Length: 254
Length: 230
Image 1 (cartoon, rainbow over the protein chains, first blue to last red):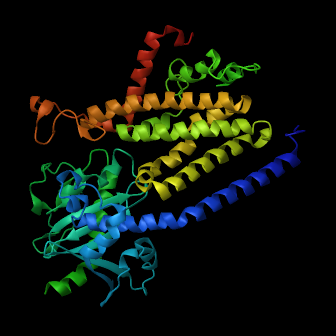
Image 2: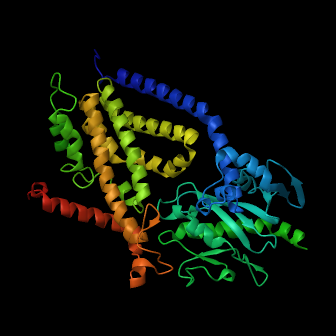
Image 3: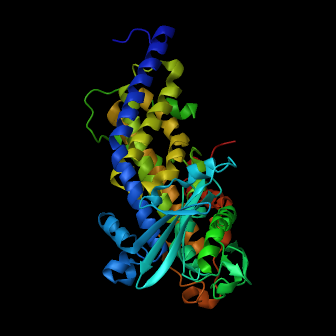
C-alpha cells in the first residue's frame, strides 16, 4: 500500500504530519488538564503551609499515625482559612494584608528583584493553633539538580523553629529527595536560628556529633548521607530567605 | 545488538495462538537469558541512579512497563509507514509524547503520585532499553508480539531494579519501603544493639554497579551457556 517510504518528499511530509499531530495532541491535553492541575498546585501550597505549622491529618483525626500526612485536599481550603489568620505582603517598609499572598510566585519575585529599583514582595503567613501564634516564611533555593523550596514556621519569639516543610523538583530519589521525609524535617523543630543574638540560620551539617539532634542551640541539624549538595542547598536557602525578613521581624519584636 | 535484532525477526506465521510457545518466550526470555540489564547491558544509567531505595525502583518499573508496552504497540502499528531515515526521531517522539501525556494525566488526577514520578520522566525518555526495543523488535513485528516483547523487557529490567533496590535500601539505610527492618540505628535497638552499622556506601551509585555485577556473576555461573567464548 505504501509506495516508497524512503523518498525525501515522503520523509518531509511524514515529519510535518507527525509534528502537527503530536503538537496538537499535546497542546490539547495540556490545556484540557490545566485547570485541574493548577487547582491541585494551589491546594498543595495550602497543605504545605499548614504542615509547616504542625497542622496535618493528625490534627483532624487525633491519630498519631496521621501526623506525617497532609490535610486531605477536600478539607484543606476550609482548614487553611481556619488556621491561617493573616496573610501579609512585605514591600520594604510597607506591610499590607492580602488574602492571596500565598499565591505569590517566589521564583518570579526573585527574578524581578535582580533589578535594584524593584522592591521585592515578601509573603508572610500568620497562623494560630491552640492559642499559639506562628510566623510562616516561604523560601526557595536550589539543590543539586533543580529548585528546592519550603516553608518554615517560627514561634512567636521569632527565634525558634516550630516546624518546616521542604520539597524539591528533581533531587536524586533516595538521597537528596529525602529532604521531604519526616526524619529530616522533624530535626528542625525547636532549633534556634540565632546564636548570641546573631542571625545564623540553620546549618545542615555532616558529622556534627549530634545525630539525635539533642542540642537545639547549635544551629545545626544532621545531614543526609549521600546528599551533601542538596543539604547545603537547604542551609543556604534558609539563611538567605530568612535574612530577607529580619528587618520586619525586628520591627515587631520591639 | 545487531545479532539480537536478527534473531528476533521472526517470520510471520499465519494464525498463531495468542500465547504460543514462541510468544511466551518473548516474555520469559528477557526475564532470564536475555535480560536487558545483565545480558544486553542496557539501561544501566537509570539502574544506578534510582535504586537507592525500593520504592523508587518499583515506581520506575511500573512506569517503564507502561511506556514500553504501549510504545512498542504504537511503533509496531506504524512500522510500515515510518520513513527509515528519520525512524529514530519518530521513536523518540513517540516515547516523549507518551510520557508527557501520562505525566499530565497523573498531575490532574493523581497529584501525589505524579510528584513521586516527576523525576523519572526524563529518565524514562532516555532509557535506551525503550529505544532498543523499538528499533530491534517493534519495527519488524506485529503489534501483539511487540506488546509481549515490551512487557517482557520492562519486567526483566524491573526485576533487576527491584533486586538492586532491595539490597541497597536494606544494607544502606536498614529499611525497606521506608519501614525499619533491622531496628533503630540511633536508639541502638535490634541488630544495631549488637554493633551492626548501616553501610552508607550502599547508597552511592558505585555500589549499584557492584550489585549488578554480582547479579551477572550469579546468573552466569548458573547458566554457563551465557559466557561468551573468546
